[in-house]
Image 1 (cartoon, rainbow, N blue to C red):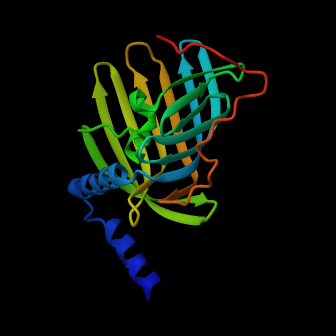
Image 2: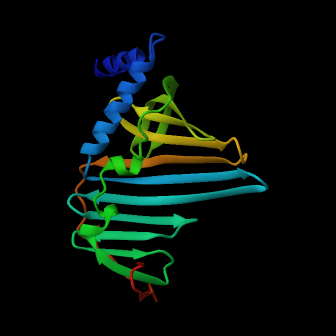
Image 3: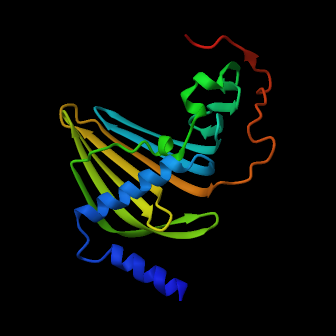
Length: 224
């Protein structure tokens, strides 16, 4: 019975009568959920491509992220980016290359306060918003169906299209494809963010927000 109800609810979201206000309402729920989600963890894959003007650059970064209010956050990148940032509630530890690291104060480091809304970086007031279909995302905990919401922006000569695969029941963006093109330069950028696991209000192991100095790394002064 629960599955029949869920299927009916999803079908209602995707009915032909789906209009602009429905897409906006779903994004509003996403924003509200993301702002209130202050304790969460996820595994994410980010892929980027820049083309045009003789360029064709591609990169992939895998991210393990955990956040717990107040002022605890761990973000460990691997792949094209090896950045490590840990906030333990009082101090911040950052390493960008594995050869050096520096300490800071968590209370003055914006990244230490990291609700889900900061990760999404939702841009307000798109020029158009619409539901364009349905899809699914494979997470480690199982397959999740989602509604495809497309939003567009125009900033000077740059056109941006963002297609978000949103779980309508949890109001989570599980996959986000942002495509932008500059009419003046012809430069085109595609950035895809996809969750491979996600959990809200998890129980964190004691060492989640503990910084371990990379082998051979030396402490440096924070940048001004």
